[in-house]
Length: 401
Ligand SMILES: Cc1ncc(COP(=O)(O)O)c(C=O)c1O
Image (cartoon, rainbow, N blue to C red):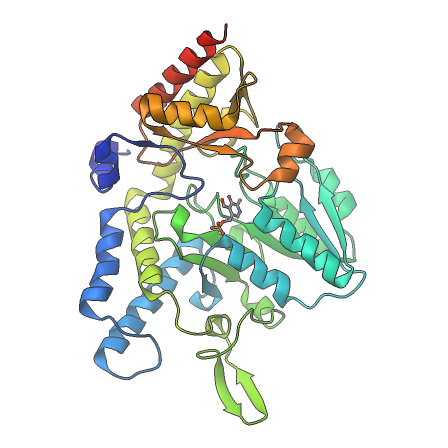
């Protein structure tokens, strides 16, 4: 059972009365995570890896402990499959620039993607002349597997899709698509930015080759992110940056890259942030991902059905059962930004508005020139906060009657 009242004490920002419903953009950070980061600065501030002194040994141990926590959290076979990045975007870019592309290769993606999992593939297409096939979902953001069956063929090198849409919150069938990709010898990249923070994600069950996600959307600090690369695939991926920490031997005319995650982590990493992300994973683990999922489902059903009942509101995406706590909507012809400002001013409710870095989805599927309002919840949101949002929306709607 979720003890929201108790949990909220870890987020001082909530004491100001703010209802923070912009978690899909970035979550809040609880005190235990901040304390763990301060522990690094107060007690063992140094670099990692390169020195033998006590402080550096301790910092290195804490840094590697985080890698192990992340590995357990997403159930990788080994912590060597966990690469620290600064965010989801960096992870996806690493894969896009690291794989060796040949003219005639094919990438399959979807029109539901966040720009970070879309324009990178457009750039690969421009640079290497590959074929990019974009699968379109239904108006509710649902995919038909037969579209993937038609698109994925022997030329396909990679299928790249998000696990959960950052606009609809809908969960996509990535496991089934991964199976299909592998049947054709293609690799599967999953953008887990909106799934990993909200549900239990197991890379072995999903069967993906890459999973990218952001620590800052799951109670970790900004500047922390993760890219899972399956061990067998790591040799196929050229690091984005090389330099200090990535080699085990260098001569005047050669260098040899180390094996494992350090190959991809050039230079001094974001040490405090990685240690903070480890603490965030402990924090989520103490609550339990199943508990988080179930509690968010209750909030989502309440928000989704409440909004659906208000005249002149259009709610986008699948029904409330098939999604995480993201609900996007519009009110009549009001601009999404005006609605977001009204919610802030009238009731201290923070939501996102606009395109949500998904312009193809807005233009092609929803045809909403001003974008949409997006309320995205986490385990520290309450039913009362949902009521606050609903009551402002009902008032705005009746003022338009
Ligand atoms: C589905 C999805 N992919 C990628 C990203 C990019 O994440 P980041 O800004 O942390 O790189 C986001 C951010 O909102 C997202 O929602």
